[in-house]
Length: 96
Image (cartoon, rainbow, N blue to C red; front, side, top):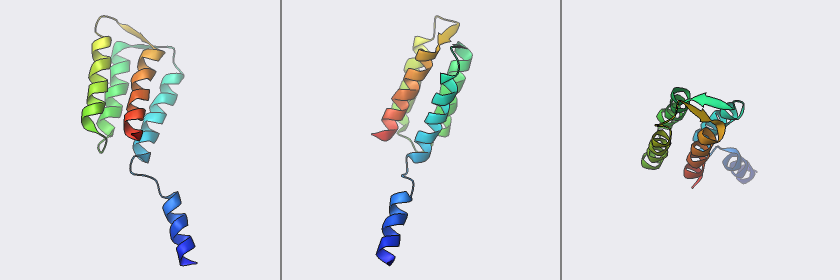
């Protein structure tokens, strides 16, 4: 019986990256409801996620945000796909 409890507890325990993935999923849900963002809003969302991902692979997440930032440089408006793509990249990096 104790072995069954231990296995159940282990199976239902969140993985270390689960909270980070949930955070990215929340940001994805938010971004999915909007068609367009100002550059400032898009960067604020991405940087906000980056700053909250304390235990994440920092270099890869930072690189994703920096790449998005460079792609937004010459525009004042950013469409949803250009916000969602970096968030999906973050999610992929976290699940690797």
